[in-house]
Length: 149
Image (tube, rainbow, N blue to C red):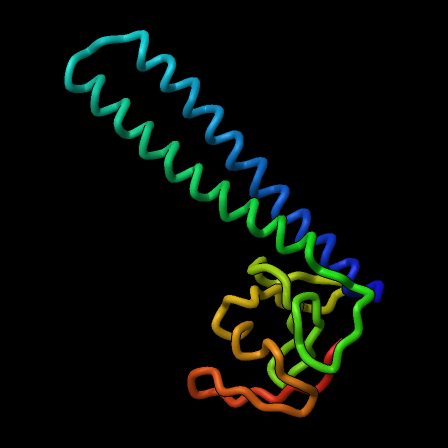
């Protein structure tokens, strides 16, 4: 249980860092847009404004994704026990150990590597609902599920 709590905390930090970066980018773009509005250099001015609007739109989309990740993490119930893989499961396979949560990549706890994966990722989608002892095929790899916690 402590391991899953540590992994969940790392995922929360991952999302919070991502949110902070996006909010900084959006703030800087807003300031730059205000500066662009104060100058009027013709076509160059319009191009600069258009580029800033595109950057704001991109950051807004990234913000939506990060907020969805945060919501996913809030839905994880670490105390819930299940024989089938579900959100929040820690899955040991013969290829690695996965934490079904969000796509946060490799996490390290006590010197051991774990992979935070989303249920919508290719491997996450294959693992979801499977039980101990089952096999999944990802590309040319056959992956055996050893334990589910």
